[in-house]
Amino acid sequence: MRSINKVILIGNLTRDAELKPTNGGQPIANFGLATNRAWVTKEGEKNQSSEFHEVIAWGKLAEICDQYLKKGKLIYVEGYLKTRSWDHEDGTKRFRTEVVAQDMIMLEKRKKDGEDEEEYVADSNTPDYGMGSADINSGDPML
Image (tube, rainbow, N blue to C red; front, side):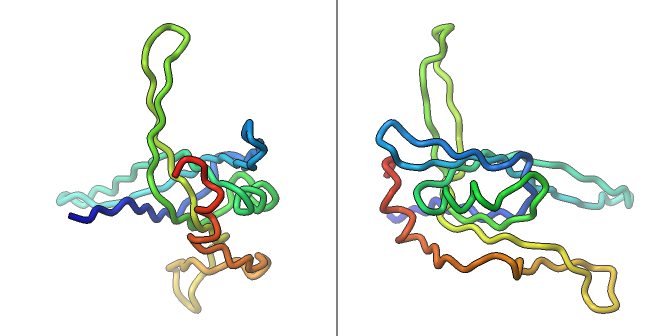
């Protein structure tokens, strides 16, 4: 049976992207992304919750993220979940689940004509690097 591991998020960056090389020299960027969910209860009370995601990007996409992604920016990220584990200094095993980005689009919020509702649109200042899944996966040593 087939399985699917796919994540699509639209949210705001919680910190600037940070670029580091791996021991093998491969560029890797990491950044935080916050997503929000809002709902109304049966009683008409408005509620909201936030989720915080750790995102990593490899290769050319990592370099692009480092160059353009700054705290507060609204972005679209598409990728998959990856869980890492390691032994902590205190002897406990630690786990961390991250989103491995395969595609990223910078967005901006704009009001629809004559309406209060906002829509997400691609940032016209963002160059198109044609970063498809096949381009990114080839540099991911975790595959």
